[in-house]
Amino acid sequence: MNSVRRARLLKDLAIVAISIIVATFIGESTLLAGIFGVAQNHLVISSFIGGLFFTSVFTTVPSIVFLGKLSLLGDPVTVALVGGLGALIGDLIIFRFIRDHLAADIGSLFSTKTRMRFSHIFEYRFFRWSMAVLGALVISSPLPDELGLALMGMTRMKTSVFLPISFVFNTIGILFIGYVARGIVG
Image 1: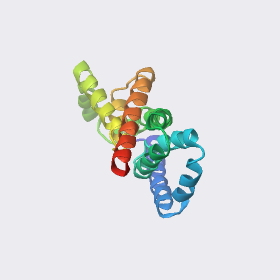
Image 2 (image 1 turned 120 degrees about the horizontal axis):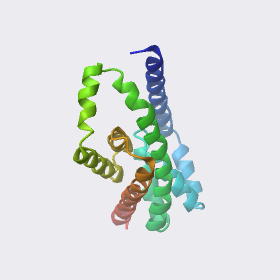
Image 3 (image 1 turned 180 degrees about the horizontal axis):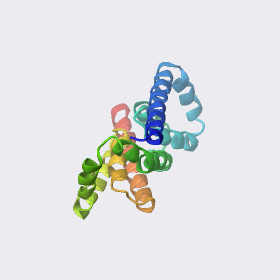
Image 4 (image 1 turned 90 degrees about the vertical axis):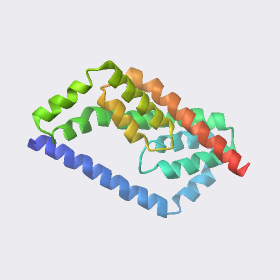
């Protein structure tokens, strides 16, 4: 592995470590309680921010709770649509990071022969399509989006194809969370 790729991989790992630390701090602080108080008066902005945090492995759980509570305060469809837009932005950032950087950095850990064998798998249209569908299903679930985005990013999916998939499936996932929250509390 050359020094540039090694430096980028270390930078990527540092970003992940910092994200874990920040998520731990947010989870243990009273920050979420304060945000819920503000959210009652600003449903649209709060839904967008909740959707933005719906995408990351480090913020998914607090975001699910947050979006569920927002759905109790307002219309679940509005929360889902605006939250889906926020999640689209979050996914786009992660998708471009995975597609453009992380895949190459991880690939550099393997020998050229192994990379060549693995890349041939993606020449099959059925495999690329299957990975995209599986990635979309992960995005719509309450699971963190990174796994689904990694599956989609490995297929070198175009951003123009990715955008509507991300929006629709995140919106469906958030809507499901809203209706479950209403059913539990309701």
